[in-house]
Structures are given as C-alpha cells and as structure tokens.
Image 1 (cartoon, rainbow, N blue to C red):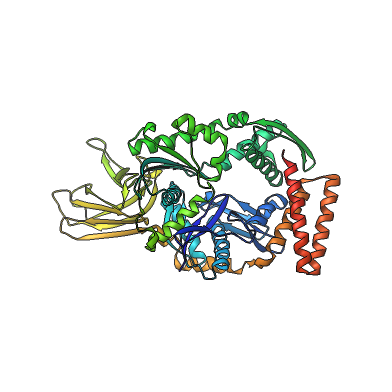
Image 2: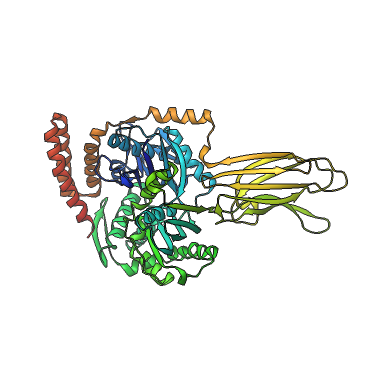
Length: 566
C-alpha cells in the first residue's frame, strides 16, 4: 500500500507518495504537480476539475467555483450552473477524487488511505469536514497533519543533523499559519503554532483588484460576477509579476471597458497595509506561547505560494530580524511533508531516526457556572483544561462540583477556543453524567481530557462513587451520519466526468474561450478562428493531428496571456 500525502489547498492541491526513502510528487494529466482547487460544470453538465475549471472562472464564471476551502465548517452552498448546488465538503471531495485518480494512474494501484494536511488553525469542525470530504470518495484519512508541521517534516528529512530553533511562516492562498519548532539530531518538537484561517494570498489579490477598479473610477463590489472574475485575474497576474519585477503597467480593454494602471511594489505594499498588520498577531502569539524572543530564532522558513510576495519577505526581515529561507519549493513542501507523515504512520524503515511531536492548536475545555455574588450565579463561562500549544499526546484533570446540593446530574459541555465565554468558542459535544445524591453538600466530579496527535479527544468524568462516564470526540470519524454520507456519495457519483485522455483538449478549448472573453474586435475574430479550427480538428478524431494543433494552440494562448499583463 502506497504512503500517500495530500495537500488540499485553497488555490492549488497536490498529491505525493513516499517511496524509496523520499517523497515524490505526482503530476496530473497536464504534467504539473499543482492542480488548481477549482471545480466547474461545462454546458453538458460534465464535471471539470483543475486547469480547465480555472479557465472557466473567466469564460463562464457562473459554472465554476474556487476558494471553497475557506467555507469548510459552514453551511455555505455554491451554485454551478442553473441546476446544481454543492457545499464546500462536496467540492473538496471532487478535488480529492481528481488527485487520487491521477495517483492511481501513475502508481498502478488504488488509493485507499492518505494523510491530509490542514491549516494549523483549522478548528475541530473544519477538520471533520476535511475527513468527511475524503469519506465521500472512499478515502480513509489515517492522520490530519498541520500544514507548517508537514513543511517542517520535509525540511527535517533533508537536514537531520544539527540543532536549531526555527519558525515556519506558511502563507497559502487562503490561510496563514506560523509554527515554532526545535530540531535536534532528527527529533523535531513543535513548540507553538498560531494562525489565521481567513488570511492568505487571495486577500492580497482582492485588495489589488479593488484598487485597480478604483483607479478606473469603478466600485469593485458593484461589478457583476463575470467582470469581477476578470479583475481578479488581472490582479492575480499583476501580483505574480511583482514578485519578479519592480513595477507593472497595464492598458487593456476588459469586456469593452478600457482599464489601465501603473503599480510598483511599494504601492502594492501600501494598499495591503491592513493585511500586513494582520500577520503580526499570529507571529507574536506563537513567540509568546513558545516562551522565546525573536532573537532566539535561528532561521525563518517560508512556505506556501503566497510567501513569494516581496512584501512577505520584507515583513519577515523587518519584524523577525532574519532573512527568510526557502530552499525547498514553497508550493510543494507541505505535500511532501504529508507523504513523510504517511510513511511515519506506516513505520517506514527509512524514517527510523526521524521523530516529530506536535501541539494542540486551540485550548480545549468545558462550560462552567460561576458565583457572581451571594445571590447570583451565571453559566456560560469557559474553563480551560488543555491549553493551546500543549504537546500532544496529553492528559489533564480538572475537579468541578455540582452547582448546588441535591443535584443528581451534570452536563459536561466540551468547547474549543480562546474566549472566556463558551458562546464565542466552538462546541465539540457534551457528556451527561449522573452523580450520587447528596442532600447536604455539592458533589465533586473529576473531569479528565485526553488528546492525541490524531485529533482524538476522550472526555472522562468520575463521580465520588467511582463510576465513570466517557465521551470520545474524534476528527477522523468525519461529521456526517452514515445515511447522509450515503446520500452525498450517490449525488457525486451521478456527476459525469470527462475521460482523462480528453482533459488536455478540454483545457485548450476552455483557455481559448477565456481568451475570447478577454478580447475585443479583431483579436476576438482571430481567437474565434482558433476555436473553430481546433473544434474542426477534434471532430476528425486524428490523435496525431489533434496533438500537433494542441501544442501549437498552447503556444499561441501562452503568448496572448503573457501580453495581457506586462
């Protein structure tokens, strides 16, 4: 059985196998390990995932959806065309299925289990949704691994010798995590982790899109879905260009509307001041929880595609007084680390001298009632039992008592979070406990929380008569009931999928339509001739002729897209 690791990302997803003592990334049908986390339905209601779906975000935005990972843990629904609605769990499942299909074709075996990475600051409900997405395609999740921890594993495999304290600064498309670790001769200990599940490269892109609209006397929020998609694409291309050059100039028509602007790296940084400020709190919290100062860090490692932005490197250098490092590919390193974790779970002999410990990202505790004064008692207070960034596995005991004498039952309400009031934290479950009747005094109950690296939380309550009640809350069981799971599987199985040997042709046609949507006048006539010509060749079904024209068309499209932003 292959040791599989998956990076289910906001903007891109990857799948990796650990074999022959090292992780190997698996390429999709387009020859890239990066699969855009985009899902679409074409006009025939056939499912499209990855690169062709990304092109449809511009050419047919009502039939494509992206950035849905951010909505895990919610009930948000996404429309694809006039007849289909999907939740974030469904859409993540479709991306996972596409990744696994690519791996199965490369490896020649079925993919039944995997380690999947998640943002360190995903709460328990978001993590359960990731597991449910895997269950929808028949994939067993052997472990969820925090993304910065996975990145650290990949670096640890490369650099097993020496001793250092380092920070992993993980800026992905939709999330931001920071972890502080200590490494000593192959043993890596996570000291602290913090983050923001709603801050990533997409937020910097959106700020830039809003600025571009304002520069042209437009309100970004007033644009229709199609026009907004064009502005987002222009902003994304501009953001990427600014990682390579000091300034960008743009002057094109978008859907018949002239749009132009000039922007430098400094201006890009200025319009994102608010997002840059949001980076500071997770960094400071991680340093505080690890009980170290920034001067104690030996190195800062950048992870995630969005970490390539010059303003990120500038922030790290100014705020942490270290020049950031990225010796491994920032886009690949999390998937590689997830595959290493899969091999560790399977006790792969190549990793006998590599040890990793992790921490709980959030505080775990229970609801309690407090005496406000002599006459008043109030409920809804949060009592921490396992504090955030405690090394796992861990077990902690807390003694509580009934609110009043003669009380025969208590309810242990379990929560996750950092707020003093439970209403602002995430509810994980409850345990009802029968206590011995005591007319004269309040009864004491000992509550034990035990939490392990797989996300399993066991809550035990022992009463004075020695009786024990328990509740097990596990991330790896998913959230849906077996009946609901079966219903969602049936819905997804009904979706028709294009044969994989046709996907490259579908991608070329989707990109051609995207170029047509971007163009006007003579350019539009030229691209229409490309579309009709390619359609005619596909109709003749001559594989060599199709492959030759596909290669030619890919070159033409690349030239046109490169011309769009300079």
